[in-house]
Each structure stands twice: as structure tokens, then as C-alpha cells.
Length: 145
Image (cartoon, rainbow, N blue to C red; front, side, top):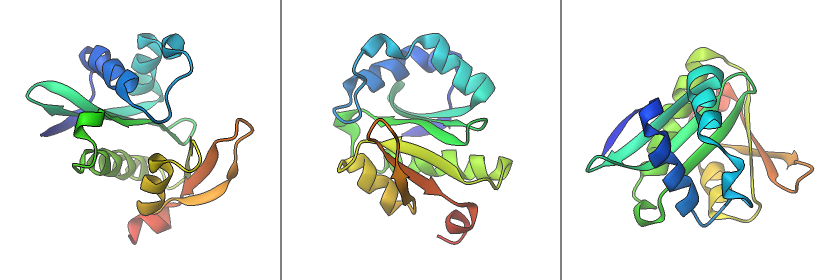
């Protein structure tokens, strides 16, 4: 497994991974366009990928401007192998090197994703209007985990 910063040339493979997931699926797969991903990994924040045999099998993207996790997805065949945890660590370590501001994310309630984030130290912070659970991670909590 190779973990590295995402590049523009990774976007097509990142989109494949996004469409393979079974949780937090997009209602419309065309909703997130390649140019959206490019904007997030080059201007709004940063992204990381995990490759196995030259193929992207997971990725994460943090939005520094909005102080939020924009994406964290692992292909189902590679789930529960530590890939998500490492992508999360890379993303959050980088985020808190840029700012000490609390970071947020939304995810579907009662899912493996929600449990994953809670196990990484995130705390519930209410709900978003769309029904997603709002989670937050404060700098002090991450530093001392």
C-alpha cells in the first residue's frame, strides 16, 4: 500500500472508488464532477490517496476553507484493512498543521462511517438539516489522542 498526496491525474480513479461505496452514496452519481474534485484538492484544501498495485483504492479530501472533511472513501474490497484510518490520520494531521480551528463533517446516522469517526475521536454536535449527523473534532482532542 502506498499513501500519497492526491494529484489531478488521480481524479478518475477517485471517482471510481466514490461510486463503489455502499454507504453515504450520492443520490445522483453525476453530482460531484471531476472539476469539483480538482477544486477541492488544489484550491480549497488537499487530498490523499491509497494505491495498491498502482490502483487507487481509497482517498480523503479536507476542505480547509470551510473547515470540513469533504470526502473519505475506501473501495469495499479494501475495507477494514486500516486504509481509512491512515487516510484520516494524514488528512487530520495536515489540517491541524494549517489551523487549530475545529473541523466538522456530516455523515449518515447509524452507519459504519459514523462509528468510524467516533472511534477516531470525533464528537457528535447535533444534526444538519438534511438529517446527517454533524460531528466535530477539536484540535486539543486530536493532539492528545
